[in-house]
Amino acid sequence: MAAALPSSWEELPPELLGLVLHRLPSLGDRVRLRAVCRPWRAGALVQRQQEKPLPPPLPYRAVDDLAFLVHDDGGCSLVNPLSGFTLDLPELAPAVHRAIDGMRTYYNHSHIRKAHVKAILSSPVESTPDPLVAVLILEGFSVVISACKQHKAINVRMSPGRNPGLPAKIHDIAFFQEKLYALTGREGLYAVELRAGSLGGPDLSSGGFHRCITEDPDQLPIYDPREHQIYTVEPEMTLNTWVPGRWMKVDSLGGHAIFLGSECTKSVLASQCAGGVQEDCVYFMHRIFDNPAKEFLGPCVDPLADSGVYNVRDGRITPLLPEGVMVELRRKRQYLTWFFPVDA
Amino acid sequence: MEVDKGKGEAEETRKVAEADRDTVTLKSSDGKLFEVSKEAAARLSTVLAGMIAGGSIDDNGTDLKQIGSEALENVVDYCNKHANSIPSAALISSSISFNTAPFKEPEEWERKFVDRLSHDALFDLVEAANFLGMERLLDVTCHKISEMMKGKSPDQIREVFNIKNDYTKEELEEIRQELAWAFYDD
Image (cartoon, rainbow over all chains, first blue to last red; front, top):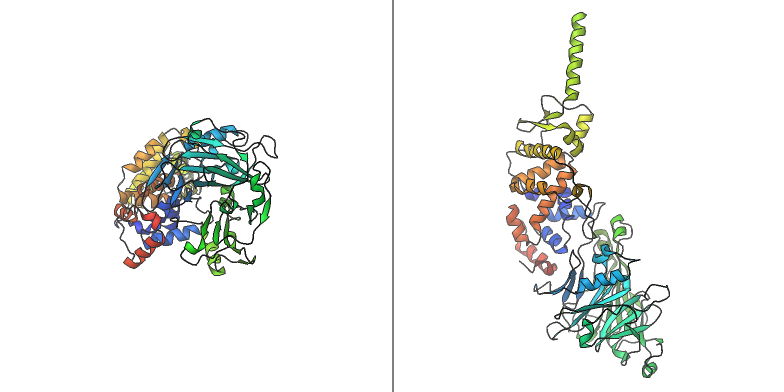
């Protein structure tokens, strides 16, 4: 580094580029840095193979064609990464705070940024006056629901389950006909009715959910990602809504394909999709990514620990991606997630 | 014998005096000399601490051939300022967050220190800090560099750092398509 030579930022050594990358929590910033010039791209790649991997980027979660973004301070927005359209949800973070307060024995406010498990939208933002966003939080112990336009939000949780003091854990949530459905591990399917005024009221801290069976089970297949099994509610049970539902195995998905992930799930009509989506198939993917501390230590990083395509008709499972691609992803520590750009 | 003994004593005295000195002299690649607080140099730079402990400090100016005078002046300035500043809570407590690696936030004076630097000077300083094993100064300079990049498009980053775009049009288009979501603000 002779003083006479002008500095050349292209030549910033990879270890220094790494220190800079460690200070860029946004995935967008990291990607853009790599697109600046070849030496930086190469340097960032070298850095990625170092013993200290980058901390996980700020979470982006796909909600239809919007991403659910959690800011550093816990504030939440819906952002269309392609158009830049942004919808802030100012009441969501306070509702998460209240949920954390309600479970003070287990969580504190340092959990605010990693509270969010899954975010869903009740209907498209463009075509509905005021759609709702529901976010499964605190490992499934609570759900916060916020209106997109009116700034109102509440949190809802299940009545205590097997563990005294802890609400029953929710595995998945789905909107269907003005109700939010929640699937629990052992207690079955629950729903909370969302009327216009209910978001302005107090939090439904306990017992907000009612046990139920959906009226039209064909249209509400709910999946338990942990079991990797597909169930739908037994049709005979629909008449008596307050009797616990039973699970029944199905051998067809009515032409749908289901995309299953640790953090988002979606069912699409295969015939309406471009790109060879097979009907009656479940595309599943489970990233081992849930413990940031372990992520730092390295050993449990596996981008596609458990993935494949399950054909419901014949029960066969085929690999999601060719083995060569999987090996490459593991080597580069790259993660995949489902991204659903626009509804068909 | 008498004379030799006297000379030996004088040498001894000189050595003691050197050990007692509370500054060390550093020499840049272009031969300029800088005095820096020995305590701060040893505390802030693993390389200088090793040299001081190993006795390889030259009273007439320890050669640092890799570092130009402007960068060395900034290093010395930083060390001396550090020697005079009282470590505050901000220095001790690190900002631990889920999304970023734990590192210490720069203090107000450190921010000002790097803010006044030209881009060239900043580049030379970060390399000098790396060479001298100055973890704290690396934190401060890399923080500044990351701040200069946040939210900017690749084009804007190239402009800020005066970097030539060495991608072909086709390659750029490929990157752009592959990662379209990251480039909406271009």
